[in-house]
Length: 269
Image (cartoon, rainbow, N blue to C red; front, side, top):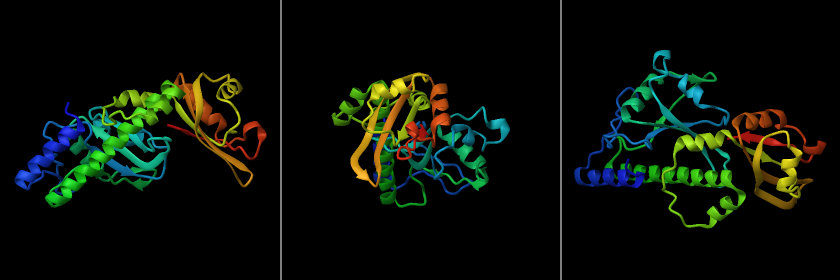
């Protein structure tokens, strides 16, 4: 499989020579990507402020007879450093045929009674070659951000030391990461706001000893008083997704040690 940079370079080269870019002519037309062999980085973008949607919500948009035949990878757009949800979902398909089928078959779909509108990521015939080159560069930026997020999340799940060392290194963030691996790590990962910044990582593990926590550490902290509060964001890695889900369900919205200044806000990746 070509890297995103090679695919984009090929498309830009063909555009420069011919002035033509294959794309989508309308909502019910095929999205004929210039990369004829397909590429798992070409997909659909969905803007949404609800961070709790899961892959099944998007599978259920399809007619029942097609739900098992169209496969796609699913990612939430998250801050690459602190892993917080950034109001966007991405669906990546194996080939442009599956992408076209999904795009057209979900045209009238709704999630939570709200009409779903997907935005294809890539060039289209409605734009000038110059604008399409800009779109390709923007797509490359999105792809690199996703890879940076994947690298940092992978490191955070490995260890605190690997995470912070990785923030300082100059490794090529365009390295491809296996989405299934990242999705599996996400299922075992939790973000927790507002734990005391003075409480050590091992002490937190001991407090929550009845959950199978791999490790936890602070991603962000602010030791300046914000009114009567101290702000912190912790990352928790679990050894299994069941305990990660139970932890969120049991503690989201509760007060740590019954302290009203430390209301735990929990986001399961």
